[in-house]
Structure formats: C-alpha cells, structure tokens
Image (tube, rainbow, N blue to C red; front, side, top):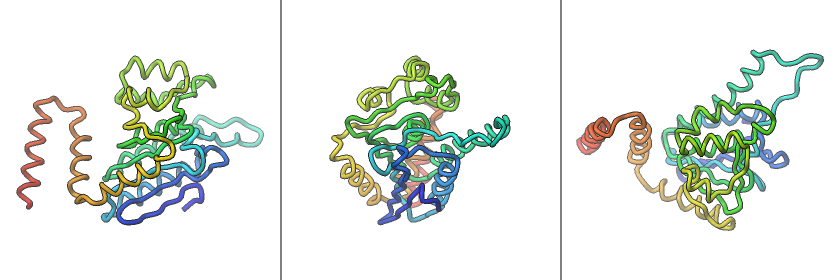
Length: 240
C-alpha cells in the first residue's frame, strides 16, 4: 500500500487516511490508484461495519494533482483519459463499499476532494471547512462532478456552484444535502468516532441492508420502492 493512503482497522471500523498533508492531501494518479485499491480491499472484509475517510493534517483533500507532462511533448488524449478514469475508479470503489462510509471533513475539500465528500454516505464537516469545485477557474469544465452532483443537490444550485467555481461553507453544504452535519472543529474526531462505534455495535446485515436498499430505490417510483421494501423486510424477518 502507498504511503499516500493509510489504513487502520479496529473493532469493525476501518479508518482510511489521505496522507499527503504537505500538498493538502491532493491526489496524484498513483495516490488515486492506491485509494481505489484500499477501498476495494476493504469492501471484501466481511467483519467490517463502517469506513471512515479522513485527511491527515489541516485539509481533507484539496483536489487532484495532475501528473507532469511527458518530456518534450503533450499528453495524448488516451493518456489524459487514463488519468481521468483513475478518478472514476476511486469514486466507483468508494460507492461499492457495502457498509456505511463516513467522511470526516476539515479544511479544504475541493474538486476531487469535494467529489469524495459527495460520494460518502455520511459527511461530518468541521465548522470552517471550505468546499468547492474550482475547475472552471482553470478553464476546465468539471464534467465528472456534473455527472452526479445534480443527483444530490438541487440542479440549479449545483450548476451555479460548478459554473462559478466559488467556495462555500459547510452550513451551505448541509442545506444542499452535500453535508450531513456540521460540528465544532474540536469535536470532529470525537463525533466521527462515536458515529462509527455506534454502527460497529449493530449487526452488519442490518446496516448493509439499509445501505443497499437506499441505493436500489433511487430510480424507483414510490409504489415500486414500497413493494421492494416489503420484499426485503419479509426476507429479513423470515431469516430470523
């Protein structure tokens, strides 16, 4: 495992730390690959009940660090696509974790970092956190973020955040549904630990079923979701 990603598993809770504090925990392609690998390995741990994602030092993740261009030439479209697909693999691996994922966010969560926030199941953000999608400020359309931000935040608000590139605080993030709860900065670790411990104290099948059910009904009608709810609950009760 890369030193850029640290993993500790204790009492059913995995803590995954982005460990490039000198760069604001920005993820270069190697670090993004290590993050995806760590998440895939955790997804296979049948004893796991929760995953905490955090950043070392002052920031959660200040974004993506682009690799230097090849000597004497520009990167080809295929090379650029491979770098960008690394982001997709990390996002997909985070979504594929079968147990709840908790992002403990402080400092900056920008670009790719804010994408990880959105993809996490529960987000506890310290007061003073700065979130945002600054890609447009570098004349880049953040199409990867746009592919899913509008599924979480109201579409007009999501578009304004992306097209302006402005930073916003955790209170606005909470109103938009990007942040679950804002906590005092000095209580972030304690609040995160308490939530993770509470999940670890519950049967894995219960919390995993909740996560799977919530995911499965996203594109269902109300009636379809109700029928699916009845079937899932009947299976759970019959197995006891």
